[in-house]
Length: 107
Image 1 (cartoon, rainbow, N blue to C red):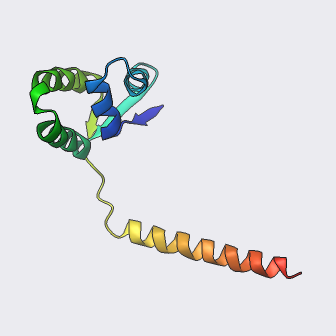
Image 2: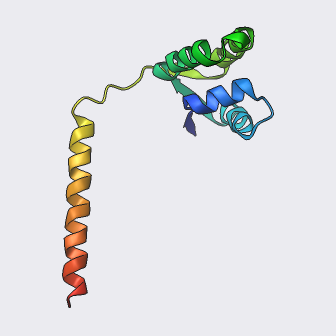
């Protein structure tokens, strides 16, 4: 199973090795799973560490060196027009469901 690991899990795993997010991270990077991290998440991880945890930069560097051996770093997909179209489709679906529900409740 392919598992996408988000920035919050990475930060928690790096800062608190015994935490529940760290345990989830460890399970995600072990076979039979294929763990992936978007390059945007790696950039965000670096920015957050620099801004909030600069005193622990050595821990960060160690974590990232192990991370890069354990996960596949993939490019962040470009969403483009797909997201606005999906939002419009979802909105139309829910609006039609509400009107259908309202019509059925009158029967």
